[in-house]
Length: 362
View 1 (tube, rainbow, N blue to C red):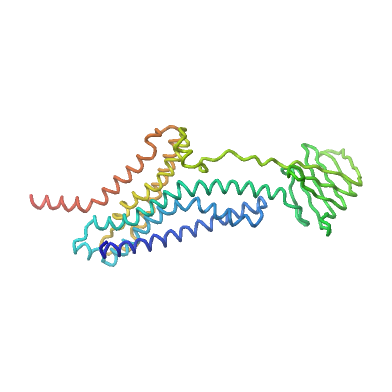
View 2: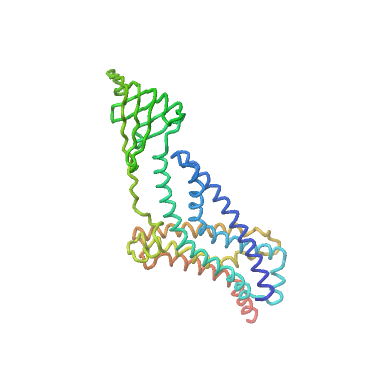
C-alpha cells in the first residue's frame, strides 16, 4: 500500500469512527428514553432495563454504519480538498483508481461487518429482546406486593393497595377494587395475605376482617357485606409465546420461505451491505470540492443521498410485500440506480476532460 493510500485510509477511518460514535450516542439516548418510558408504564424490574437497552441498540447498529461510512468519506475528502492536499496529490499524478482503492480498503470490512450484523446479530438480538420482554412481564406479574404502591392484578381487573407490611409478610390496611363487567366491588380489610401457587398460574389474596361494597356505577342499589375472612383467587394471564416476528427469523428461515414478506425482509438485510458498497463509489464525487468551498460544503448532499436511499428502500420493501414489485427484482433496481448515478458522478471529470480535449483538437 502506498503512503498516500495509507494516509487516505487513516483519514477516512478516523472520520468514519467519529461519525458512527456520535450517531450511536444519539441513538442510545433515544433508546434509553424509550425503554425507561416503557419500563415506567409497565413497571419493569430495574435489573432488566439495561439489557433491554443493549438489545434494542444492537438491532440498529447495522443501519448506522453505512451512514457513518458515507459521511466519514465526505468529511475526510472535504478536509483534504479544503487544505489543497488532494489538489497537490492530483498534480503529482494520483488518479481516481488509486483514490478509489483506498476507499474500498475501508468499504469492504465495513460491508462485511454490516452483513454479519444484519444476518446474524440483529435477528438474534430481536428474538432475545422479545423473550426478555415476556420474562419481564412474567416477573412483574409474579412480583410480591409492595406496601404503599397500587398494583394491578388479573389483567387489570383488580387493583390492590396496602399501607404497610408486617414482619411475617402480611399486608395491613388493604384496599381492593375489582371490576367484573358493570359490577364494581370495593373491599377494605385490616389485613391480607398474598400468595402465588407453586406452578405460578394462580395468585391468591386472603383478606381478613374487612368490608365489601358491591354495586354498579350510576345506580342507587348497593350491597354491603362484612366478613372475617375472604379469599380472592386471581388467574394469572397466560404468557403464551407470541408468533415470531419477521425481524426475529434467522436467515435460513428467510431463505426457505417464499412469501413476499419473507423475501422483502431478506432483500432488506442484504440491502444494507450493498448500500455500503454503493456509498464507497458515491462518496468520492461527493467529497470533491471546488476552490474556496468550505470543507463541509457537500455534507448536506450526503445526508440528502442517505435520506433518498432510505426512503426508496423502505418503499421498495413495502412494494415487495404488497406484490407491486416482483420478488426476483427485489431492491436490485434501487441499488443499480444509485450505482449508475455514483459511477457517472465519479467519472464526470474524466468525461469532461476528454470532451474538452476532443473539442480543442477539432
